[in-house]
Structure formats: structure tokens, C-alpha cells
Image (cartoon, rainbow, N blue to C red):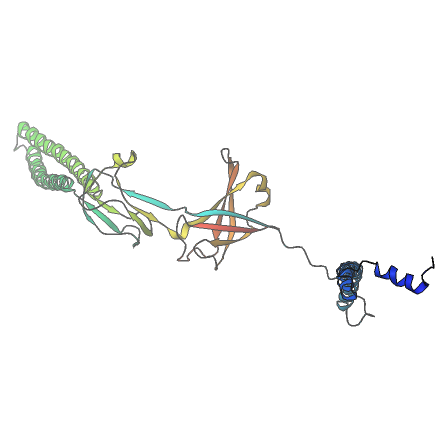
Length: 342
């Protein structure tokens, strides 16, 4: 058997190879493209990770260089600032040291009320009139008795003067023997009796005068006047209302109005016991009213209470305003105090 030529054998082997449809150059490129893309992305991320810290470091160095002074040859001197002055801030209220609750001294009915809230009054100014008709009648009786006593004194003085004249005449006649001793004794007794009656009348006149004065004082109690200069902050009574000092003492209706001297307003703050050593009389403070936060006022520590509050563990401090006549100041207003410590 004759062997086939070599070329024929090669061609036969080549014909037996299985050729796949996607085994082309374009297909092979797509098959290897995706893995290569992932590899490129991974390599790029690694490079970025290696490059980023170095870049940040260079930027930091660059910024540090930019903040340096233009003239690097001159040394930079640090300026030391003085520490802020220590301050102590606390809250308090405005309190009037001179405040009077005006009440009736006698039980009666209010006939007229001459003031209202916000009115300014002076000492002795009439505030209210009460029904004092009975007191007025008593005063009229006392005045009449005083007048009667005065008239009685005048009559007795005239009678006594006449009796004294008769006694002198009788005594002269008796010395010359023209009058008896009996007439002399009678004249003397008459003059002595009239003198005693005159003394009694004088005493009655004094008693009547005292009674009239007492009645006038009682009647004056039905005229309620202002005991101090100040401002009416509250009128608690009305015309026609019955007021009584007994009810007032028991917390009932008896007060007519309240008068406050605004010039006596002070600030009262409760300082914790642990901070009282930081508050000294005479210390300057800045007081800011809650109603006027943009306009602080100057104040000074006036006094510190000699006793502590056991319930609150505080000690009260009192401050006065540099301008107490400020019309914005009112009792019970809230205020914040900032003390400047020395």
C-alpha cells in the first residue's frame, strides 16, 4: 500500500479541526476587553490612593506658606491679651423701701374717693372722705359745752367782781362801826363761793375744750390723707364700700389704696452662700431691666443682709440706682445684675 503524500496528510488534519463560530479576532477582543477594563480601573484607583495623601500634604504645606508674613525676616511677636474682668450675674427684682398701705382708722362708709391708680400725691393730701356724721355731731356737742363753760365763767367773773366790791364796802363800814360782823361774814362767804364756782367753771371749760379737741380728732379720722409723698399704685376700695381697720388687720377689706415712693426703689438679689465672698458693699454693677434690655443702668451694692436664708441657702444683697428718679422704674420689675468683681 502506497503512503499518501505529506501535503495531503496535513490538509486532512486541518479539515478535522473544529472551528467555533465566535472564535474570531473581533470576538476574542471583546472577550478579553472586560477583564482588561477591570484591571485598568483597579490600577487607576491604586494610583489615586497613592497620589491623594501626597497631594493633600503638598496643599497643607502650600497653605502654611501662604499664611506666613510677607517679610519673613521679621520675627512674629505674640501679643498677650489681658484676661477679661471677672463678672457675677444674678437675677433680682425691684422693691420699694417706702411703701404704705393706707387704711381707715375707724369703721365707716366711703363717701368720696379723690384719687385713682397712677396719681401722684403729697403728704397731707386728701385721699378719701368717710361718713363721719356721728363724729361731727359729737364735735358740735363738745364745742357747745365749751362755749357754755366759757359763758359760765364770764357770769361768775362778773358776780365775783360784784361780791368783791360788796365785801370791800362791808369791810370799810365795819371798820368805822357802821356794819355788823354778820354782814361782814355774809359778804366774805358770798365772795368765796363765787370764787369756787369760777374755778369750777374754768375746769369745766378746760374739760370741754379737751372734749372738743378729741371730737375734732375723731372727725379728722374720717378724712383719709396721704402719709407720704408718692404714687398711687392701687386703689382697693370703692365709693359706698364699708371699710374697717379690724378687717384690714385680719386680711379683709380695709385698705383704701397703696402709696409707693418710687425714689426709694432698690434691687434685691439672693446671692448663694458660696458666692457671697465675691459681693462687697460699694461694688459697681450693671442692672438690665427685662423690660428695657438695650438700656442698662448703673447701680451700686448698698448693703448685704446680716442673716442668711436657711431655706434657700442664700444671702440677700441690696443695690441702689445711680439715677433713682428714672420714670421707667416700677416695683416688682425683673432685673438682671452683672457685678464687676475687683
